[in-house]
Image (tube, rainbow, N blue to C red; front, side):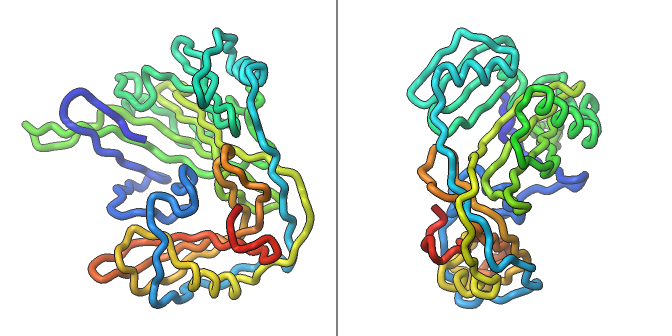
Length: 314
């Protein structure tokens, strides 16, 4: 999220559990930051001459359920019914990609293919507003309660959704005369992710942005629905690591030489709902550190775990 202001410039600062993180390199460690784009993301897949294991292999089931995706095409009636959950009734407008309602102060938008939706206080979210000064924000736990209550009361919490994290976004205005940064606004993003069969779904994501006085500034939801298909044997973590060595890693570090795996998870990979993806397949998520010729950073990669359904994520 990027804050904008008429003069000076804004620096985005993320705070996680009270710790300030000013990202100096990408991608970051948590798979949540990769959910806005494809698995290869904004970064290239590159071969590393050496990939080593720096953590223990996780437990894994020898067989796991593959899910068949439920494709979502949103009609005008569907859009209106969803808008009603937010207390909005129209007039409903449309463009090539979505239906939307411009209300006061909120705008509702839902994509025709896939059903990604947003509900946004346009005048405050991603903007500078004196109501959203840091001292006006609720505590993190209170922000989480506000977000969960809103989603449940408006029938917006999907089945299998679980709390993920709280992140703070600050708009910092640089005062060139005083040579210092001044906090102009701040909000809290409460994120939720999905689960299937007790495993995380990498890609199902929604968040609620909370501003001053606990006001809901934005809701965003990107979610694939799916139904059980059948069980398949899956790769072991050891086999997935060998696949990783053949596939390469996703990193912003140029000419990676040595990569060290520090985290392995097994779950399901879900692409953006408007993409064609017949199945949600068990998938290994790898993350770790990487060394290049002149820099170090992090990497991530997804390795599909069901050989019978091919090596692709889709």
